[in-house]
Image 1 (cartoon, rainbow, N blue to C red):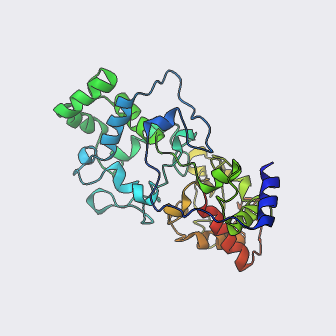
Image 2: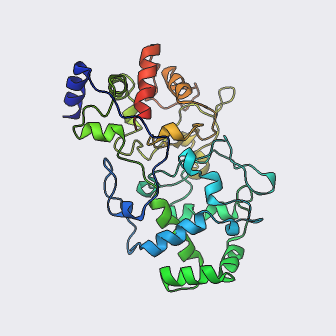
Amino acid sequence: MARILLSVSFLLGTAVAQAATTEPPVPSFAFLSTPPIGLPVMPMPAAYKPTEAMFDLGKKLFHDGILSKDRSVTCASCHMAKNGFAHPDALPPGVDGQRALRHAPSLFNRGYGTLQRWDGSSPSLEAFVLEPISDPREMGLRLNDAIDRLRQSKDYQKAFAAAFSEKPNPEALSRSLATFVRGIVSGTAPYDRFLRGEVDAMTPQQRHGQWIFESKGGCWKCHTPPLFTDERFHNTGIGVAEGKPEAGRADITKDVADTGKWKTPTLRSIRLTAPYMHDGSLRTLEDVVKFYGRGGNANPHLDRKLKKLDLTEENQSALVAFLRSL
């Protein structure tokens, strides 16, 4: 039905899209039960009952330097709202002049995700939100020391008591941060409004780009709607040097077949999250489209889904326009 609507409205050619806002979606506790247009209800861990007090505590912690070694780095330092909860640098800065090993992934819709991080090394969102705290390249503070700091704070004592009826502890810290991150979602885009029948929500160029995305480009095979990720791992050739890829997912699974594979990122609000890829090596969406147009970077483990596309400049521009509609 969506493809029929696409074809008809493209032929009409009369739609004019609403101007895209430059502001990222604002995290909201409401999204945990009432997702924006285009997204399903978010799955929740067993025996997990999020509350607004948990969300508010997680929001406060997300923006507080108390969780880093020298109090100079926060979760928000690497996952910046104005940059789509990613970072404008290829490798975001941490404590002591360090840099993270990989580009900060966007946090949009991570509550829908399974394995976390580019290599899938985090088994859950609850595990993922704690890891940067003790990472020496990021926040550089032992988890026990972070808990001690929180217990010495009267404000946090009250906040944890209100949210969990407990003193600060690792499980409550994890749950509160994860609750806040679950509220960072991206939907109700021009694409979503178009699919529900608002034919003027997307421009003819954007609709042409959608046609390329769904047909010749084959982009949907990995960036599967509505989340625009298959939550799997693929070798596209990013990070390949002299024909040899980085270990990628293989570092975790110890399976040589996973060499050079990295997690498929969401395309939601991708216009905000440059630079792109796990190493931040592609600066613009135009660079991304050109990269896939030439079929990625050759290496022995290149994903078989990647093919040279030979897109015209007009088609490349249309595909970029569609990506911006997400």
